[in-house]
Amino acid sequence: MKQVIAARTDIGMGQGKLAAQVAHASLNAYEYTDDRAVRRWKDEGQTKVVVKVGSERELYERSEEAKRAGLPTGLISDAGRTQLEPGTPTALAIGPAPDADVDQITGDLSLF
Image 1 (cartoon, rainbow, N blue to C red):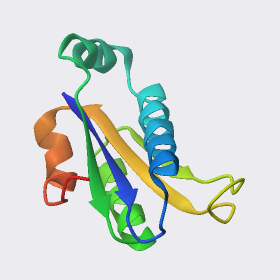
Image 2 (cartoon, rainbow, N blue to C red; image 1 turned 135 degrees about the vertical axis):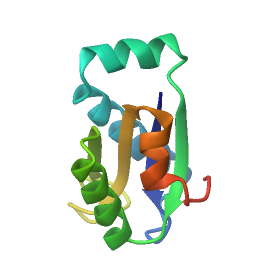
Image 3 (cartoon, rainbow, N blue to C red; image 1 turned 90 degrees about the vertical axis):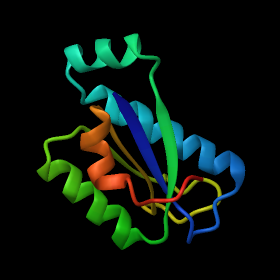
């Protein structure tokens, strides 16, 4: 079981902004995960992997693919209080879910 969080590289987020957006996405997807999967994920160490996506379009495509596969997702859009325009999509978490299921959608992405 793992969770993969994809963050955009094309919008110039600072390190703090990136960390916050990844955390928001992780928690959001977690909230939509069934209790049994959450328990298993916690028992296995709550693996999280952060990867890069190069565009808004790619973020949405991965989100739709994960939804079609029945995986929990958390797609985050920034509130626009600091670095980005309001509503800018920044990060997508997929899972927690079985590794192979998440890898089908994110396995080709580079690590952050």
